[in-house]
Image 1 (tube, rainbow, N blue to C red):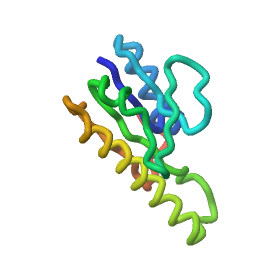
Image 2 (cartoon, rainbow, N blue to C red; image 1 turned 45 degrees about the horizontal axis):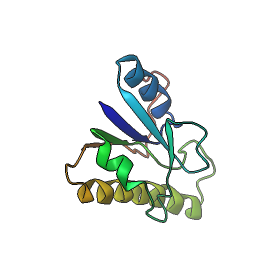
Image 3 (tube, rainbow, N blue to C red; image 1 turned 120 degrees about the vertical axis):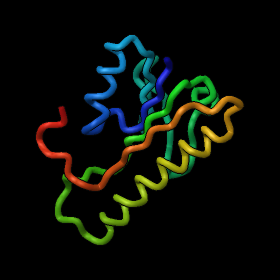
Length: 120
């Protein structure tokens, strides 16, 4: 399968991407900066920009994006950023998938809670 992952550099994404690859899946990581390899694609979730062709070719899209919950203190402005980062990324992915002629499966998990030390 071709799996596109938003949030690949985060807590869960760093475990998921190698697992998917070990299972033989092709993975494209969505990055907000310049992509540094063929397995990366630039996106801007706050502006709703993503490579539509990439999403059209995907079998599955995984959304794990969001600002870090490990940052303290949690000021009101950072709480707004926590929420917006999750809403914007999920909405960008969902809209792109909805535009696809054959929509990919969509799995989204962008919690604002704590997972603990053992993510198994």
